[in-house]
Amino acid sequence: MSETYLFISDVHLGLQSKQIEKNKELSLVKFLNFAQENCTELFIVGDLFDYWFEYRRVYQKGFFRTLTALQDLAEKNVKIHYFIGNHDFMHRDFFSNEIGAVMHEDPIDVTLNNKRFFIGHGDGLVKNDIGYNILKKVLRNKAIQFLYSWLHPDIGVSIASGTSRRSRDYTTKKDYGKEDGLFDTAKSKIDEGFDFVLFGHLHKKCYLKYKNGYYINLGSWLDEPCYGMFNGDKFEIVELSRMPVNQSGIKQECK
Image 1 (cartoon, rainbow, N blue to C red):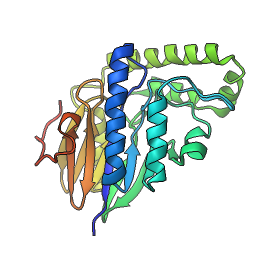
Image 2 (image 1 turned 90 degrees about the vertical axis):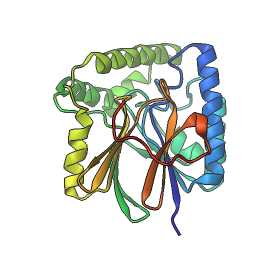
Image 3 (image 1 turned 120 degrees about the vertical axis):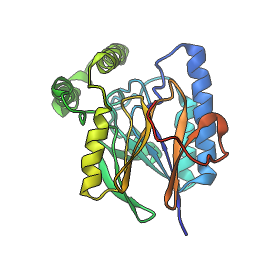
Image 4 (image 1 turned 180 degrees about the vertical axis):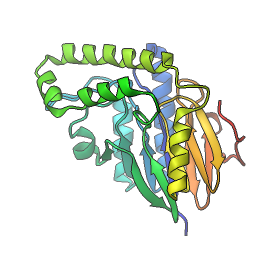
């Protein structure tokens, strides 16, 4: 019997106005409650938060409903995979110890229902992005993160928020060429034997066939909130407004 897997990416909690964030979180909690009864594993493919900086004894204020819903999900024996994105990069052990999530700093190779998936946030995998790859090594450096953690949380979180916005501005203004740069990476992975390659990061929803595989990008919750669903051989992208009704398919294009 096939199991069901759900995927979300680039929710960016904390980015927009207070009212928009409240509505976004309510939608997210509704989805997580739906996931309790409708999936075996949940994959959060990066940037759940617009920024996240976790101290040894302090984690940032806000989004209590989300954290509670994730813990409820774990207590229902749903395995949670959390991919660290380019915005919510500063994690210690809160999500792993308190919620039980499996944390991933890099893409993974995983078999789901006898199909081989390559899953990652996608940052650092776009061609001609040398500047970001250098920045990523600095931001992910454990020694630098340790020194940064000595800042008062009010200061540290404020700086993290500013860094997140600059990172978004860089990603938005960067010219990656006419085509989706991650599609090139996906094609190379499909050539290696993967059936599905799934990313986030670019905020550009895609479902493209290449040879015997598919490249999928879930876009972002800033535009058209959606989630991915895989059970058996079929992968679907489901608009959140239509949850839990399954869709029959998706156009072979990028938006």
